[in-house]
Every structure is written in structure tokens, then in C-alpha cells.
Length: 137
Image 1 (cartoon, rainbow, N blue to C red):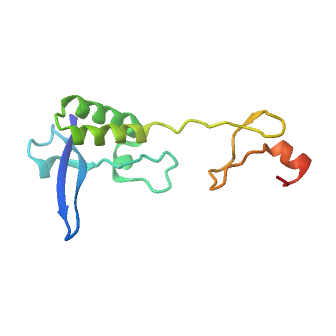
Image 2 (cartoon, one colour):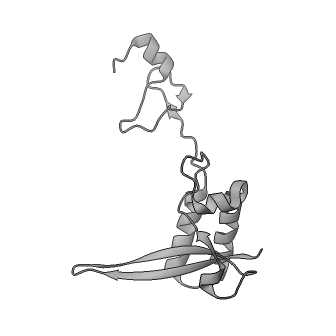
Image 3 (spheres, helix red, strand yellow):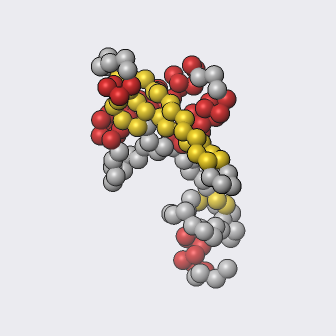
């Protein structure tokens, strides 16, 4: 199978503003050369590894979906000339990268720790100090 990324640009206008939307379609060139016959799926923004809501792309490619998405996007980035589309491809490539583990320095004991969840308010005291001193801040 010969997979390739095909990018469609749709322009929308409103009375007050205008915007565009880019769609990334995965096509199989071994099936056919024309678009509607060789369509496989739409490339999603993020590929979830937890499998709660698998997309058609994840169902089709299975465990190789993340590597396939990266390969398709890097190939498209090399061949694309339009700067706006290149920016969108690099943004999607960055979305595929795993989030780095952020460590925070405790205010009390000065040790580094990582929070359990993403919170609206930043946690500045480690769980050991929270147990020791209570939830006073």
C-alpha cells in the first residue's frame, strides 16, 4: 500500500471575518489515482493512545498509527511549498510529540516533584510536605 497525505483548503467567509480550514486526508495511491476512490481516512489532530474514542485512522492503522502519521506529515512537509500549509503541518507534528514531564520545586523542602493532574492553580508544595504540614499555605 502506498499512502500519501492530501491537503484540502476550504475558505469560509462571514459578514465580519474570513477564515480557512485545512483538511488532511490519507489516500492510498495503490487503489486509484483519483481522490474519491482512494480515500482511506482523515488524519486526526491528535492520536490518542488510550483508545477511549478511536478514530477511523487509529482503527485502520492500529499500533502503527503514530509512526504512520509522523511519516505522512514529514513527507508532506518536504514536498509542500505554501508557507501557511507548512506552518499547519509543523503544528500538527508538534501535537504528535508527547508532552514533557514538568517538575516543580517545592517551596518547603526544595525537592523537585511532579503534580498528579493538570490544575488551574499551580501546586507549589510537594505531597510529603502537604501531609507533614497540612494544607496550609
